Amino acid sequence: MSYELTIEPLGETIEVEEDQTILDAALRAGIWLPHACCHGLCATCKIKVLDGEVDHGEASSFALMDFERDEMKALACCATLQSDVTIEAEIEEDPDAETIPVRDFPGSISRIENLTPTIKGIFIELDEPIHFQAGQYINFNIPGEHCSRAFSLANVPGSGREVELNVRIVPGGLGTTYIHERLAVGDRVTISGPYGRFFVRKSAGVPLLFMAGGSGLSSPKSMILDLLAEGCDLPITLVYGQRTREELYYHDEFLALAEKHANFTYVPALSDEPADSDWTGLRGFVHEAAQQHFESDFRGHKAYLCGPPVMIDACISALMQGRLFENDIYTEKFFSAADAQQVRSPLFKRI
Image (cartoon, rainbow, N blue to C red; front, side, top):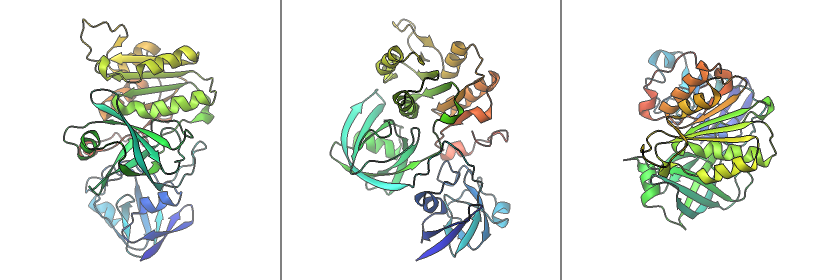
C-alpha cells in the first residue's frame, strides 16, 4: 500500500510506500529535505503537516516536544504516512547543489587496508558507479544486522566503480566492530546514497580552508582531490590533526600534493606525540594549528570542518574569533544519542 505526499512550497507530489519515512521517500525521488542524524535525535528535519495523518515513529521527545506534535510538527526521518499527506518544509536553494536521487548500490569488498592502528580503508567495487558530489556520504548496510552506518566517501567523484570509506573503530560499536573484525575481501555488501549537503561552494570563488581530525579526513580528501583535478587555482589549505604520528594517514600523499600544486598548503598537527620524537611539525589541536598558521585571521575564506563534535565546536569558536562567521562555515556532523542531548546555540541554524 502507498500514499501520496505533497511537499510545499515546491508543489511536488511523490509516492510513499507503507512504512517508508518521509525523508527516505523524498531523497529517493531526488528532493532534498534538511536532515542530519536520520534517527529522530537532532530535529534538523522538522516539518509541518498541513493535511493528513502521520505516525511519528521513534522521534525523541527532546527533538520533537509534545506541544510541537500538537502543532502538527513531525520529523521527516521518522514519520511515516497514515493517509495522503501535505507537508511544508524549509528548503533552501543552493546554486552549487546537485540533485542526485538516493539509490541502493550493491557491490563487493575489493580491498581492506590498515591506514592506522584504528582506521581501516574499506574499498568497495560497486556493480555500477555511484554519482555524488565530493563531500557527500553513504549508508553502509551492516550484513545480517538490519542496520546501517554513515561513512563519507573518500574517493574522487567519477573515479570508476570502486569507492573508498575510512572507518575508525569505535569501542563497543556494532557497525565499526563488524567492519574491522569480520568484513573480508570478496564479501557482498550494499550501500545507499549519496546523502548530505556537505560539498564545496565553488561558485563563491574564495580561498578554501579544510579542518579535519581523525577519520574526518575522508571528505576533505575527496573534495581537495576533486578541486585540484578540475584545475582550481584558488588557495586551498588543509589543517589536519591526529594524536600521534602513527595515526596520521595519507600524510605522504598530501605532502606530495603540496609539492605539486602551488596553491595547496598542508598543515598537519599532532596533539599527543611524544616530546622526544623526531616530529618537526606543529603540535596541538586542529583549531590551534589553524590559528597559528593564519595568525587568527580567517577573513575571506570558506571553511569546511570534519571530525569529532568536540573538534568541530573548538574550530567554530576559533574561526569566529578570527572573523569568520556562520555563512562561511560548513560542517558534516553524524549525531549519536549523546550528541543530541547537547543544547545547540540558537545562533547556529546551519552549523
